Length: 190
Image 1 (cartoon, helix red, strand yellow):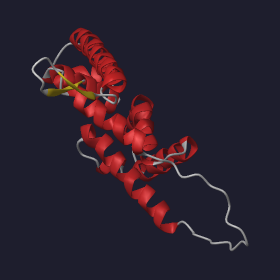
Image 2 (spheres, helix red, strand yellow):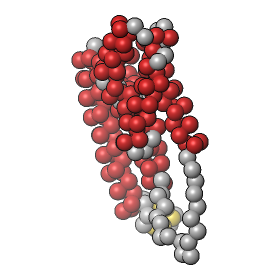
Image 3 (cartoon, helix red, strand yellow):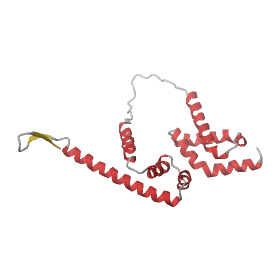
Image 4 (cartoon, rainbow, N blue to C red):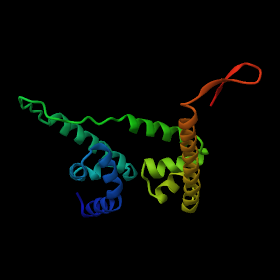
């Protein structure tokens, strides 16, 4: 690799390492493993850096290298069973609440305008910077910031509203009674 390409690769790593580490964190649970995964992917990419003609696709290339590396690690792991007389006490994580939270979030996002939803998803789900979000959506950084501010305020308002509704339902909806009204008909009081 030529000296200019080495400097180009070093500059790329210096500017993109945070975003790439976030991607690695999505692939493996342990932060130390994520750093190892990124380091391995960078080492594998370094030798092929001059072969990447369009450097704007380097993030995608590195993400693919990380996915392939993680898959190799997973396939090569050794599973060892150690028989014991008694089973160890262990708790099982219940993802039910996490799934419920995600479903609520997806439902609440629907109240946002498409532009607001795009900004929220890019900034918080994809963890893009304000500048990256602005470039991706073709707007100024100030517009991204103000749109994000209004969108988060709207989401808070909607979540608080749903929380109040849920609490009210919890007090009255579970104890709905059947009673007669003036005309002798029965109706449900909620």
